[in-house]
Image 1 (cartoon, rainbow, N blue to C red):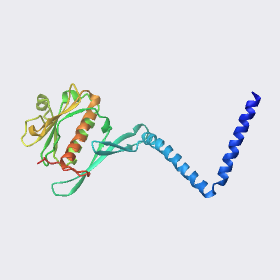
Image 2: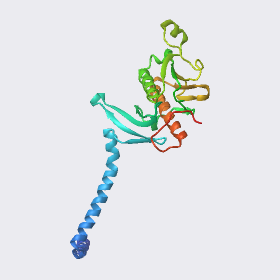
Image 3: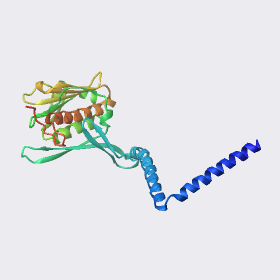
Image 4: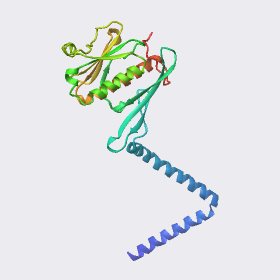
Length: 251
């Protein structure tokens, strides 16, 4: 056993001497180049592994969905910190001036599961009404955020927007606007309701879209899905790879 250990030690010693002899032959500048290359490779591997984790921890980076690139941004600090997904596009207003529409979402657009069964088109300069299921949405904590995001998006895209209730009796009793599909010509109505599934349906041909959420928790994501999908549809119709989107009826 002792003899075997001595043989192993001699073998290791011989290998060490052989390595030293080889390295002694290599010029110093070549050694530095090799070490520099190895160091860069190691640094690349470390950063490749660390960056995704770092981005996730500090809330930065980008999310790509449907040909759109959203910047992940953090607003506020501590308990008030909110992660937002920011996208913008440019369009020409009625005066022919370029306007930037900024979109801020609270949900990762690539993770929203709501089903889309519509080609969403906003006809330029056509009035848009948001018909709200006030009977059910009044109990949803995020209903005001969802309606606010949708209203801001429509307004900032160059269209006139108004809101009303789907409950005709409530509209008469409280003297508020009553809104639903088919009430106005040359206009678009977006119904926002609680339903059996989270989905988006409708057609510009009948001037009606419906955002249906299966629960209060799904209301904001489904509404944001509608916003994102309308941009994707407009971008696809324009056949453009730029950030320019013209919200007009396709020819």
